[in-house]
View 1: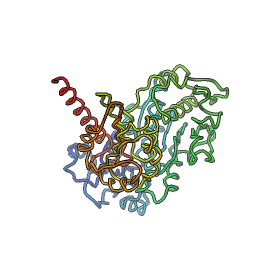
View 2: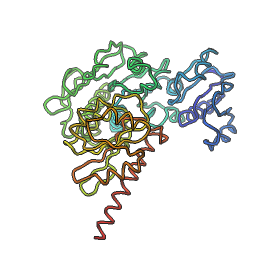
View 3: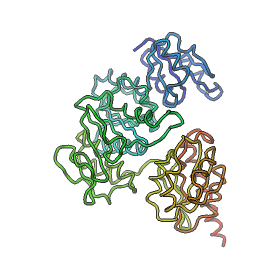
View 4: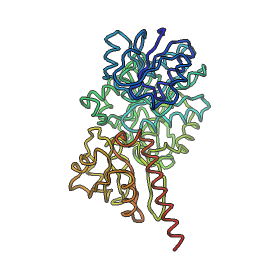
Length: 459
């Protein structure tokens, strides 16, 4: 550990890591390109001894540092990162630094489970954590799912770290080695940041790079981009189509597993808590990962059948007059939206699409939109691109923002319909993050439902 660590990004991850380092006597310099007026606690960090700076283009905070630690939202192509590399600094993700600290302090007794993928990684990560908790294990659910790994470093005891990792975080790992690494799938995403799909896929595959033969690599046998990977660790496939039967798969209405060597039925598919084909894949990935760790069947079955899911991922937020309002704000790419639409009956969806374009292929939604969707309401910067891609496929109209989209959906909705926010885009044109977007949609939907109930009560 160097005497000083520079941290780029002053949001949750940056602050959590800064606190962990200061607690261990490591000097810290923190920088964020945003103005100081957006951070109310900068003075408190200075009182703790941190050097804190703000504003675009600063590189002085690198002076005297041995490492540059990146918060998840900071691209590895940023000019400050280039300057750090020119100076010979190690450029590391927050999860890499936190992993090194945790491993050193409990002498390698932690178990690390890492999950990445274009879609399903948050649900799979949380599902694995539920299985391990049900078995009585101490669990830290961390990473891209919302709580930095560094937040758990104040308690210096062994536990199971279950981490969701984005491609951005994986770009700057160096030694990070999970005992179980899960790749849910790889489909086009973040092509506004990566020059090609191949480069994006390479970042995802880094999750396996430090694993040894005694570790486990859980991969989706139904996913063309990840099925044929050559791996050093033991390959554990999962397959909804039953393509491979050496890991976890579906057969005869049951989730089955042979991870422990002998094939066995684990749970009937009808008892899986979350509906939809995509959630069956998530359940298989979680089952396979938990099985790699020797988790008892009772704990796996309990979690599979009772898991409530995550906010902003196919979350029912309101219902009235036979109309369901569903928040899928975490559906930030085309493939996620496609999978979310697959389970709906014909012609029953009013879909809110748009936001900041990640260079997704909206035309890929054509088959499922033709079957499920009566109207598309477009919002945000990507609205013209979405409308052009879907011309002649399904009626689309510009709603501009969430307020108008929800109001128009309320006018169009009829019993049996679902108003679905699954934007296939990032949120940063109009919101700070996908959570804020989903909460705004949910609040507007509940207000519409409440108003309708009040009006009906007066009649």
